[in-house]
Length: 446
Image (tube, rainbow, N blue to C red; front, side, top):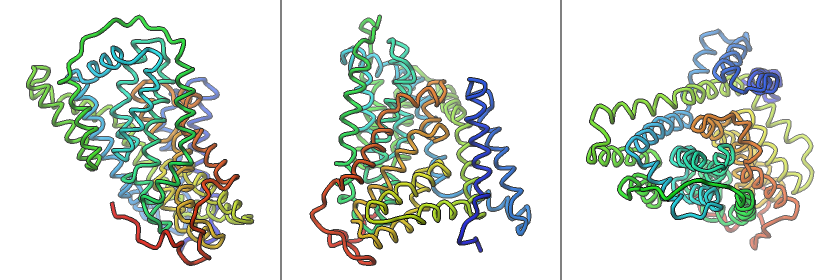
């Protein structure tokens, strides 16, 4: 049985990974100098040497179990479909037509603002940040190539929009995990969460607007085809009707393929080739996701996650302290797991105990879990969102980070909401161990 006190040494493989990945980039000035897969493999090898009470094969089996966690495998499936959709749509001209339409319609100083707003809308409908990034990153890259707007700023706008929906969408895994663990309702959590992060969204739009005011472009009016834009429109409409993200992406692949075959952009063999190429481009990210999932499971079994949980609950004092404790708890766990859904699943039960003990409204505790996990997930250079955007744009995640305004600002807004007790909820939280009146109903099922 895992030591209830936790084991700080179990976190050593994580620190080794971070030291290798981030440290080598700082020392050499090139964050691709040491491949991230090499860094995670070294960390995994170190993790497998821990805990001599278990045989090597037992540890390998635990690693495989972590890599095959349902959340990890769903993410892998999304990556596979996202890669195939991105390559297929791009191959039949969807990206070029969409970029040209945006360049023709939007004023030059609103292109990046538009990317952020569209990303927020799509991710809110789809409930996934990675799927949104897959759809919008190629467009962001195209806009950057046609203007003097940096790739890093463009990708940061894509990530910001994607994290908006990841945090707020009622079909997002993070929302579902937060709502279920805190025993509240989707719509109630959405209202509280929305008012906390709304200033961050508005301020991000303002910042992006002023940052791109002086952007110059030599772009003329390019031709575009509405038919070729249909895959993106289809993805958006399907998402609005609540279709599962994998169904959305699969439908997008089919629609792009049909259009490409109809207008001669593809033959059947080149269509399959494009799909294969797209999946191949996501292979490093898929392997990294699996390896991180296994590493997290080994760290958990050895007591590293428990140590983090205990560390955050030793000095809690008062309601605000408890809210900051929940925020810190999910933030540190997200730093360790690089997965905001898993971090909420890990910390949710303990956060519920803390919120009951200190009289925190479950709507607020669920929002805190979701906001701070998305804050960390959106800024860590080894998170799936940053890595995916960096892979599409062929830039370093560290180049994107300084422009990643929205994830940073939701963290600031989250801290502010705790400090000033915002929003002031009309229904008082219940006493410890009893649900609030507004949260008696079971959470909606996804």
